[in-house]
Amino acid sequence: MLQESANPTKYTIKALKKILKPVINLLIYKGITYPVFNEIVKELFVHTAETNFELDGKKQTDSRINFLTGIHRKDVKRLRNQTTNIDEDSTHLSLSALLFSRWLGDPTYSDKQGNPLTLPRLIKKGGNQSFEGLVISVNKDIRSRAILDEWLNMKVVYLDKNDHVCLNKLAFVPQQDYQEKTWFFGENCHDHLAACVNNLKDDTTPFLERAVYYDQLTAQSVKELAELSEELGMSTLLKLNSHALTLQNKDKQKQTAVNKMRLGLYFYSDTDNTNPSDKTEG
Image 1 (cartoon, rainbow, N blue to C red):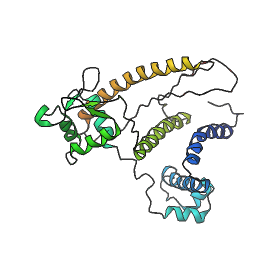
Image 2 (image 1 turned 90 degrees about the horizontal axis):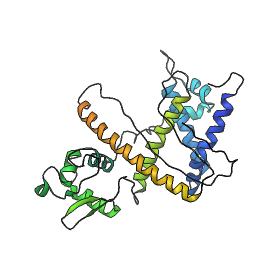
Image 3 (image 1 turned 90 degrees about the vertical axis):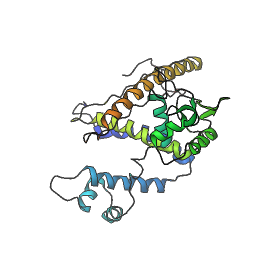
Image 4 (image 1 turned 180 degrees about the vertical axis):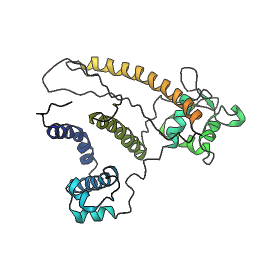
């Protein structure tokens, strides 16, 4: 809780600049200019004010949105009348991600530690415990061969000499499909930031949001910590994935099954030009 003498707006803006630096870096790298970004932000301001800051029993007006956002009423009216759905992709979940999650979490397709089993390619060779059976368990309308060809092309899987499908890695990070990567980028960053924003509000129950930070480290020490982080982090994610899948299978037919969750994991390192200070956060 900030002291009364402190200026929360000042500290919020300072944090916002820190958050936006890597985003601006990406925009410039991808040739997305400030006027485009400005229009996106303007649209988001209007949309958020309209949907999240309504007064009980009162219709949201252009004048009130103008007051909340500082955006000219002419722009407010234009943006409110747009037919574009700003959250049109928010309910989409990649089929590849669903398949990958099931392969790692469902005991049919993984061992007790959550490690993916090698799967016979066809049902006639392995029954339900096959790659074709895995695809059918998630989506009956898409041929397993189409998924397999795409995954082979992306080097997510390979075929062994027995015509079994084998996973190459324990994290689905597409190497070629930029649309897929940006989808994960948006979803993961949104939920992480949403948890952080929630924790800055006074009237909400805080979410888990912790980090460990150290400086004054050599490159070799950072490499060692990165490897340990991946080992421990993947173990946690695999266990949670398996338990979440079990709960989802139990809950999904209930009318009250309307909630979602996400646990994220990241590791970042860089050279630090600030004043050295060993510390931990969390």
